[in-house]
Image 1 (cartoon, rainbow, N blue to C red):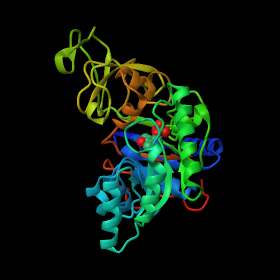
Image 2: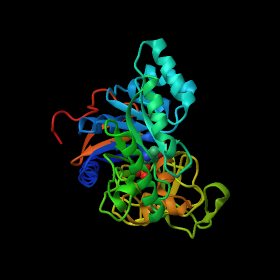
Image 3: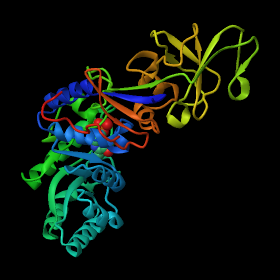
Image 4: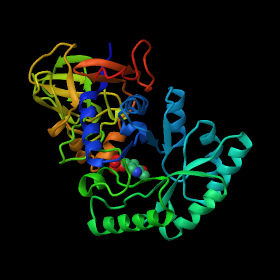
Length: 376
Ligand SMILES: *Cc1c(COP(=O)(O)O)cnc(C)c1O
């Protein structure tokens, strides 16, 4: 029996996936980097590829390799700028890298020739973010050099720098990308918007790359968060007057209150230091008292509960949501979600356990990792 775990709601995921597809009117590339923003990349890759995704995207060669080692056979796109030293590993694992430098392009083509493989890539175009990508004014020339080198350019994309903040700049980037597309002509898949770009402006190319929205963490557009963090108490006790709780003894008991210790802490991704709330077994909001430890928190109860009781440490809305957690740690919801780690995950469909992973993200034996037919 597990005492602390993440629950991923596949019905909510399915809802988000459909909503995003309707909105995108083209290819949706699920972005599963950083272990799918804490939601578990291996399961979601298999699930979404079985639900019609044509490819999934991750950030690192190591993330792509982990998908392959976990049995994912579909197309895997590597975002970011391929380093020449990574070309061989990307090829060996059948990952499709993004190119934005000539050094990486040369390495990819040379290593491919040596291995007897054909080099494939997406070309990233820099339309104003100045992070990765080939300058949009040089994209056409670079594209033709890639083709002369023998690289099959399967996709061309750009990334928005300020989709949530700057409509004029976003439009400028989209215009620049449209110019690039006109210059290059049809053939590769042109993909552009992230979650904010898609939901605030709509699609402007043939595809979108969506992370946050998939997890229901782009707010205000009807998407549903898909993750909960739950835990059972490992100890329940009544405090004496002046009993001090946790490191530094910051919480001092009035006397008589009930306390539950839950086995989840900052090493699992809870922000240390900020007062926070959890939901008790009956749905009541209960305060975390004292400092958050690496592996444990203490929660003040309204009355005694048994050790089988289930607490919701992260929920889908209100004071226990990932949004509230991000605010408490003074950051964005991306960072709050990608901080989640170490916990095993349960994937639920229609309230039933559909699949499960151990704390390392590996599938447990005997349980399905991909939907069979249209069973959901
Ligand atoms: C992370 C990332 C995305 C997804 O962004 P969201 O805001 O989570 O939708 C898309 N494209 C690139 C290049 C990225 O790095």
